[in-house]
Length: 89
Image (cartoon, rainbow, N blue to C red; front, side, top):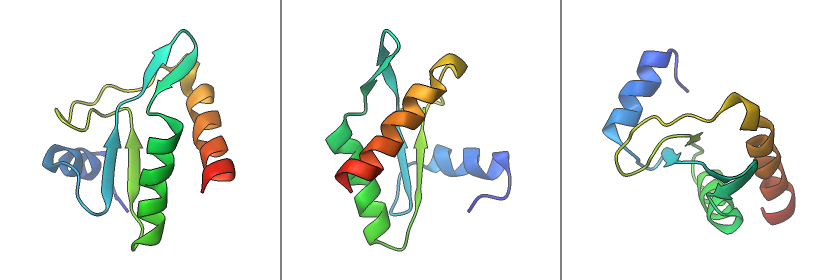
C-alpha cells in the first residue's frame, strides 16, 4: 500500500481515515497493556469488512506521533495481534 517510508510517514501526518488506523502500544512490564483485545478486534474487523486498509501500531492516533515499539517487545505485540485475529475475528 505504501511504496516508501516517506509515503507512510506522510499518510500518518494526515491522520486516520477509512484505510488507515493508528494505535499506540503501551506495556505493563513485558505484556501489552493497550490497545485492548476488543478494541483491536473491532478495528481489524472494520478494515476487513471494508475495502481493506492498514493498521499501524506504535503511533499515537491523536497526536500522530510515531512512538514505536521496543524491539524486545515485538514478539508480545505480534502474539497479541495473532491471538486477536485467531480468537476474535
